[in-house]
Length: 157
Image 1 (cartoon, helix red, strand yellow):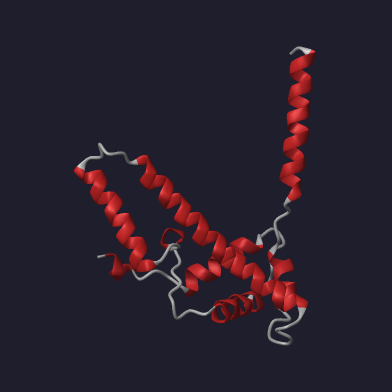
Image 2 (cartoon, rainbow, N blue to C red):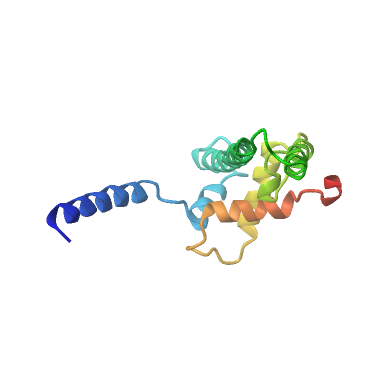
C-alpha cells in the first residue's frame, strides 16, 4: 500500500468514526429513567423527554415507511407487468387501510392518542423486572408498539 492510499484510508476512517460516534443511541435504562417521572409530573423535563422520544420514534417510522414505499413505487416503470402492477396497487391499498407503519408491524389508528401510546410505553418500561443496558430504547419502544398496536390481519383481505 502506498503512502497516498494509506493517508486517504486513514482520513476516511477518521471521518467515518466521528460520524458514527456523533449520534449515540439511547439505552432502555436511560429512557426508563426519564419515563419514570411521566405520571408524577407530566410537565417536567423528564416526562417531556419521554413523550418527545416516543413521538419522534413514531414520526420516524411513518416518514421512513412512507419514503420506502415511494422508492419501491418509483422503481416500477411504465413497462411493468400485470403482476407487478397488481403488487404495487395492493401495497398502496394496504397502506391506505392500515396506515404508513403497516410494514413496521404496528398500526396506529386515528383514535389512538399520543398520550395513550406513551402511557403504554411507560407502563411497559416500568413493568420490566430487569432493564438490559445493551437494549436500545428504540427496540423497547418498537416492541411495545408491535405488541400493543398489532395490525389487523383481516383488513388485508
